[in-house]
Length: 183
Picture: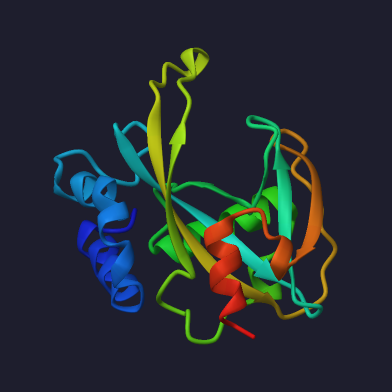
């Protein structure tokens, strides 16, 4: 069963307790939570919830993958599936699917077991081939440590390459600023 609206709202409020200055930027999320459509469905417009994994290795680097669809260097992540009971589960599943890192090789970042490291709202262009209008993703970015060494094995259908980047070079400015606080 997909994450319940009250679960998403609870996680969001816990996040905002740490980052109250971000409340206004999450307006699309609150609108999605108030609507009748399910907020984690990829067919919910104008915004829906996605999840990503911010994976940190022992050298304090963050895993980035090149998504074929966008050509961008991003954290592994994507849409929720009906079997994802918790938003964090979606991030772990996407990490495994896109980078081949199994759930047994990662542990939640200490202090972020039940709260995402970052929540980001970003625009997605229309995709006529999928009958998708322009919309927004509200991406819950979960922090994990690579607890056991494991090789990255890319999902060839969706991913073109990968990079481990130092905290200071993380692709997302909001993730970069939050990682700086972990020192």
